[in-house]
Amino acid sequence: MTVDSVKAGSKPAPSLAKRTSWARVFSLREMGVFYALIALVVILSVLTAATGRPNYLSVVNFTNVLYQSSLVGIMAMAMTVILITGNFDLSVASVAALSGALMIGTADMIGFWPAAALAMAVAMGCGLLNGLVVQVIGINAFIVTLGTLTAIRGIVLIYTDGRSLAVRDPDVIMAMKAFEASRHDMAIPILVIGAGLALFGLWRIATKGMAPNTLGMLLGGVALALVPVLSGFTLSLPNLVLYMAACALILWGVLNFTILGRRIYAVGGNPEAARLIGINVFRYKIAAFVLCSAAAGFAGVLFASRLRSINPTALQGTELTVIASAILGGTALFGGSGSVIKTLAGALLLYSLTNGFNILNLGANYQGLIEGLVVVTAAAIYTIGAKKKH
Image (cartoon, rainbow, N blue to C red; front, side):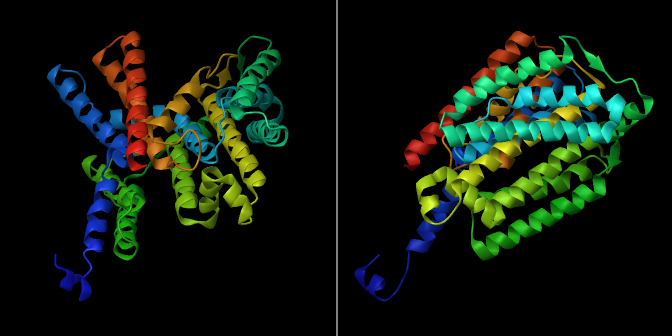
């Protein structure tokens, strides 16, 4: 390019910026979890076909993976929000167990819905306590929630007296089944939602330009629209999957398209700068703890409703899977960045692995080894990508 062309007003920079934007959008850091999920599904489909196992891509198996990942998906998306604000919560599994135990222990006396409301209130109280200790006293969130993880699990043991609790009232059992496991034909609604997301993504790209969120919206919408078509419009989903989808849509919409979402990212990215421009950092960080525990409480209610019983060790260790899902989705452990859709993809990746191992009849030892390697590899990719970007 000559100097004269520059003086004449030609602007090559936008095309360069456009190429750079596309490269960033399709980079491993932005799309790695989706690449991994697609590759895993393809590999497992080939392996199951080659070994004569049940079809991995069947509608039944697809809904099973969604169902199995729903509880962790709900908690992991809320965990993403608290990680974005720069904090951490290790107590989610214990809070979920306490919520489930309270509901099971009181449902026969007061009914399902009052018991569920009580369980949710106690769970949110745990989140408020975590947030106040972290923000008011100033203790590191990792230390605080590690302590409450143990303390709340101890409360569960005391409340249950170290034994399993079960619901006996037939009306309560029916209400639990209806709340957690009722199924609905969702082929047409998913087709409509997928087409709407794809069209909205196209409109955003046309008006706002290319960005990871808009591309994800477009591709996600197309993928959603294809699901009922490929299933022959016979797609029945349980309530649990619908709850997870609703949580994903609400949190994704709030984080990406509202002032509230921008403030949440600002609080985690640079708390001091956020404070200087008038954002109540204290309030947002407390609210993130309450949201995370509320999601855990809701997951506990769903878990207890599924089994109609609970034991003191219920969901023990699940907090590690929740955090692993967020890490696989590229959520920063030090705040300021994260995506609930990528976290959901991370949860689906982990449960697709487990589901594939079960179909292929691989031992639990191999599952743990491969899942651990996947998490470490994902963290390495995101860390290296962040350094290159910097």
